[in-house]
Image: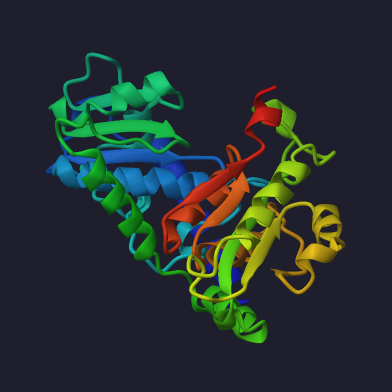
Length: 336
């Protein structure tokens, strides 16, 4: 109940600020007292996390304060940052920008020749990432853009190795609400994960949320990648004991498709080796997102992840694993 009240409070706050921004001061009145990186992450929670991991690094190396324009979107991400994490994050509403005359509307609609704001617009492509990589070269006090992709500074400003180190550190420092980690620990204890060499297994069929075809994502309701998935799991089981700390290999399985879970659990060779939570992943509610977050942390608290090609959920969970590694499956079926 407390979470729902807090969620409602954030929605009302965002609505009031939106109204204020739409009738805010003119462009002449924007006088930021510091340098800011204002980022609008969008799409689902995993996509937003990778944006934030990247933005935190970019803000640090450019001496900018990171400000996040966090949108609450029904059926995609209905919750605020505070609904999921205790880790500090400054949203636009909490930043000094409004008091300094820089309304969010003004920032988002700044023209190319604006001397105060570098408005990069939407940068959700490889070409967009090349532009974003040059942020250290920009002198405007405010840099703004929106994306659902991770990005990094040009190697001139930060090496790939250091970027990966800082990127993983962002995930290691995440502080979710206690309920989430309590669920993780209780599940691990109930199934005695400590006696196994645990591997995360994630099969994304894209059967939840908004119609996937409109997002350019290939659905897999027929489980076209199943054989490839099973082959990767079988290879993990057959690894030498010296590789698995002399422990039997077992899997935590996460999937948005319950029929896939049933299909895999029915295979005799994996009997007693696959553990999965009997929950419905629902993008339309905060609780549904929290349940997905429990699965995400369970995937991440393993040695490595076997996950669907082009699935951000398993991509980002892999950064929490001991080996910081994801083994992909389904690429050929997806690209064909």
